[in-house]
Each structure stands twice: as C-alpha cells, then as structure tokens.
Image 1 (cartoon, one colour):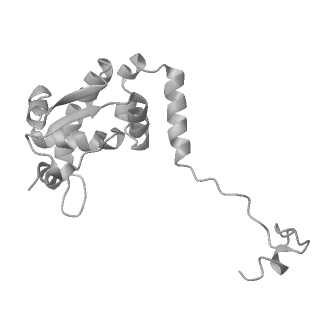
Image 2 (spheres, rainbow, N blue to C red; image 1 turned 120 degrees about the horizontal axis):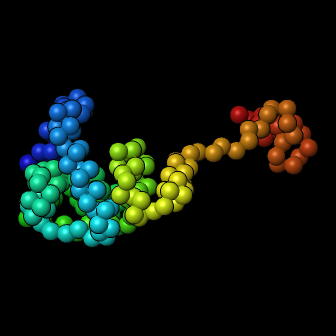
Image 3 (cartoon, rainbow, N blue to C red; image 1 turned 135 degrees about the vertical axis):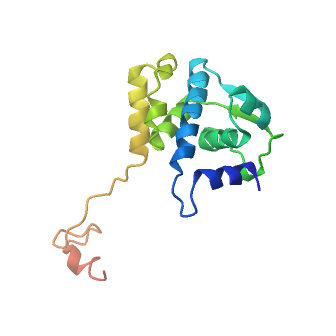
Length: 166
C-alpha cells in the first residue's frame, strides 16, 4: 500500500467521511508549514519525503498529504500513489497560484494567514480572491421569451420561428 493510500485510509472512513481526530492533528502541522513557506517567501522546497517529514516534524504519510494539498498549485503535479519515503520532492511555489487555490478550496485558515502580508498587500489579496471566486461563476446569457422577436432576424416571434421545434 502506498503512503498516499495509507493516508487516505486513515483520514477518511469507508463511507468517505473525514476522520476528525486525524484532521485535528494534521491541520495545525499543515498550517505551520505554510506559515514557514509564506513567511520566508520560499519559492522552492525540496528534499526526500522522509527528509521533509523529519524537517517539519510530520510522518511520511502527512508529508504526502501536504503534497496532495499543494499539488494543484504546482507547475508539474505529482502522481500521489507513486510517492515513497525515498521520493525526491521539489515544490516550485507560485504564490499567486497558491493563494487562489486556497481560496478555491475555501481554506480560510490558510489564505488569511498574516504571513501573506509580506507577499501581497491587502488590495492585491482582495483582487486575487475576487478573481478566483469569479472564475467559478457561470454567467448565462439573456433568455429569449417565447413572444420576443426571433434572434435569427426573420421578424417572426421566437415561438413561431426557431423556438417552434423545442
């Protein structure tokens, strides 16, 4: 069983629900890593899974969980099931992309960290938050009423022209 599969087995029950005790222990550790990365303005974190686990005082499974969480913000995502304790990890961090992913995942405890003040000013954070939220908003065009003129330009009512076959 891979480290990732082992983590998933611990973190989620058989019916897919989060195991709160596991997450209560993991999330503060994850937050400490982000506080360090953002606070130090690190654009690259690298090492073997086992080395990173030791450096950040986590298990190898927890480091794999961290990589899984940041994976979508990386230029080249990792195949999570292939990671072992000897796998070399290089996290190339793009702070704008990372911030937007945190907003997308509703990770308020991460995108509201005070360390972001050293990366982006308040106005930039607000702009990035709005950009990310707008990127998920679907805008539908104006609906054509059945008695409106047909948009094809025939001069007929929509219900008697292009809308007749619907």
